[in-house]
Length: 163
Image 1 (cartoon, rainbow, N blue to C red):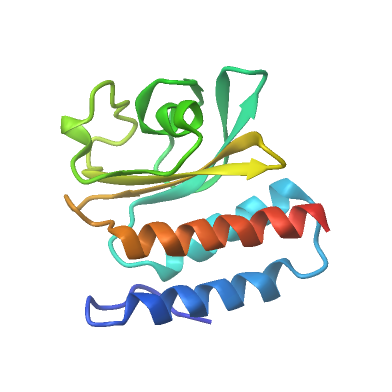
Image 2: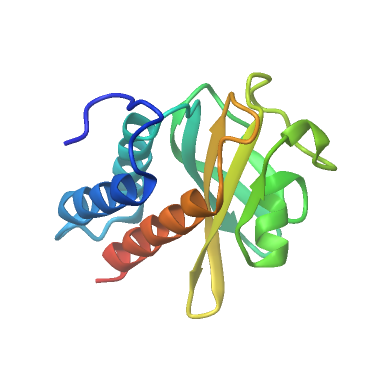
């Protein structure tokens, strides 16, 4: 298991390969979506450098995200689809990477220390189930490698809950 935060010199592609393998092992044989979301959030929070929040929001009805398992400071409980970074990911049905959340129109500040955010929608058979959300206290923390890595992690989570 990766222990604690790593320094910036670690290869991101390798880091995400390791996290993905660990997550597959961690979720093997467990189908419960809440239990799997809790372990996924914990693994991401402990494994990725410069993260101050990692967690899930689940879509309820057609237009509201509700807080799920997470690691970090207490968070906003309900977010309307189309609002903030999480709601925008739902509305667009695609990942949203924001270098500076304070420049993002309609950003919802749950934690005033967050500066950048990456939100990946949880899509299954064309339906949005929710989002996987990561926040960082560093501006510009996330890039295309992070997005690809977290998208693979979201796919592992969805596959485990379906099996």
